[in-house]
Image (cartoon, rainbow, N blue to C red; front, side, top):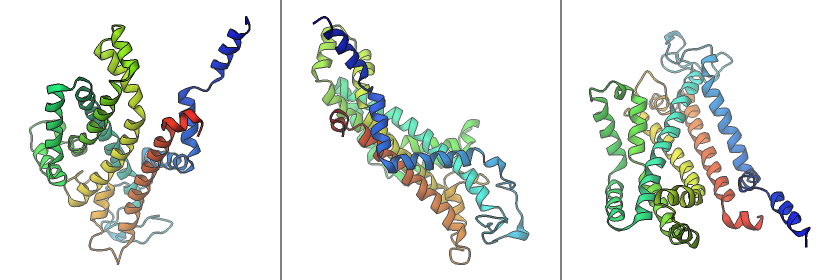
Length: 304
């Protein structure tokens, strides 16, 4: 009997931590592991875009519409600018917009959903009616109107078109995370361990931050990947229409816009930026699939 306690302690410490189990389950999803690698490569290429011998904005009309070659890997556009270089710099914008707008929208959505789901009552009714109101807005038209309105304001930092796009995408995409988090909080707030924490004198802030929110991390991360992919597509669509990030800053959407009249005579103008959007969004979606499987409670507790 005296050896039972040490043996139990050793067995407990030998059990893999939850974080290790989640990582193990994630990387067992081969497509998710490959997607992480692809996304890291895209980020590195974008970060080190300045190593390109070409400028993303410098014009060279004498070499306009050059086909892909050893000199211009992805060809050149109507102003002789190197498409490969512009795609690298455009990746900075698209990935930054996707990441930062997702952080803002998820942060706001988690705040609204947590308060609504935990406290309930009149606060829940008020916050959910506001959420429903935002969901009724036609997103693309609101994005266009908000973008035009914000750029006209006499505030210097709003003149930065990238920041404007980040803000308006975040403002129109927090509602679904809010509903998700609210539904999770409605279930978890009635669990026995939460009631026990209340009985022991745990305050609202402690219960929300230390006991309920950690149990929502998996669904929130999966939602974040979907939000990021959608944000990149939205930014590309706005830039394609001319209401997103403004020239001369290159984005994948604005590069696509220049190809409208040259789809058949200069197909590389549309193919390469479209391919980058497709690869990036697919990689993020596969990462979301991997996270969903990794945080699945049945898979974790049974060992798969």
